[in-house]
Image (cartoon, rainbow, N blue to C red):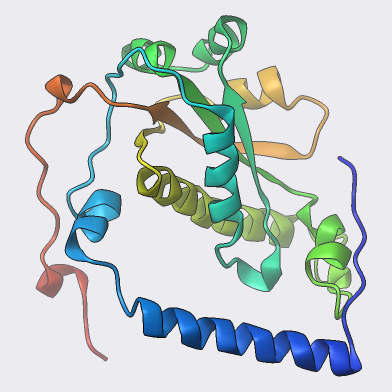
Length: 226
């Protein structure tokens, strides 16, 4: 994949950017200290995973907005290892279907868009652009296990941002792990440094397929104060 370069700001330019960033955060906090309850419900609290879809396309510009929001989320050292592949055409969906368990094929085929959420093991080669004020490539070069752990952890985090961003913009999502990563990687990423993580269907849900929301662990079971 093509790498891009960046130059770190310094001196007065750096001071100005830092001041602008701090003021931007303060101003946002004054305008909106927290999300309202409906917004929280939409993205997480009462949000549902969907597997039945209306026959309604998802505009390309909406997918670009989802990525823009996703990319703004934090990752360690701003590594940004996730890569998103939007599967839209019947031909591409047939290729993806090779990897799916039988019960998931119809769920994927009927979705307007299916996304392969992957990560690039060579993410660190983009660090001169993403982290320009210090060369952090030596932290990763020649360390494949460290690269894989960092890419998987932060790529998964970005996958979660992606789902929340899609919901925030009015789409429904249905993440899937019932597939073969090996087959996806062979079919789509052979000869590259990309590895698939999970799949996510996107679109406008057909709510008639929903059942009741399953329980979650209560606070006292999942959390501890130490």
